[in-house]
Length: 347
Image (cartoon, rainbow, N blue to C red; front, side, top):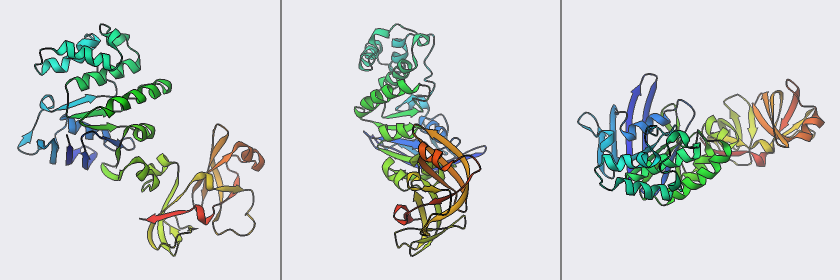
């Protein structure tokens, strides 16, 4: 069952102009920085916000098309899992899961709910109340409740944001298994690139209420077109104008790549390809910039060193290199990158 949406919506300072499509049996991930409009998009699909213009269809049925058509949330074939799960605190686990089928007039709602609890491995907690559940258990109950209505579209809003790291790994694995068997389309809103990489077949990146990129996670991160996506991919990113592979960036710096491209381009360099030196490196490499250290962030046996230079750049080096070079905040160093490590693509 396919979900299609192309709409505009203005909510105060947030202006959305978005086109999405999620195919049956596939998961569409929506990524983006805070305030980009991810959750508002999900609320539109669920029917909790009406669009100002455009159309939303589920399985070919128009559910929102102003001014004449709007289908209320309870009449849409959608199941929702919100980031705080919103389980009914006064109902038992089995009653929470049975709530949807019962409101839709299904006479065997409790039996169906027990079957769903068995599928998510929580049949022994059927009589428990939500307050007695762990975060991972609550998430699985919320998922069972959403799927129990047999929706055409499953909407997941940051479903693992409330979980600790250890629990998230287990729940992510279980969620992937359940989604693999779901015949409808799934829309997953997340800020976590790992969630998107593991769970989503396709992703869209929202920035400032617009779709900035779309494709598979690998396609999007291989060719970032914004600072946000570059940070997800762990890459340095600049825009500029190239002439036979020599790029003048928007910062006014020059960087040389191995590709003979000309015209508007994006430029990426992985931090591990950036070498640091206390003095200008010998041999006058084509890509070398003097800069001042802004920050040093250590992780494991390595560190990321951010430089304020003619070309602002981040290097990834070993802790031993930090000690040997005496790298610290405000120190002056040279950064160098081989032309073969510079990736250019049309911008």
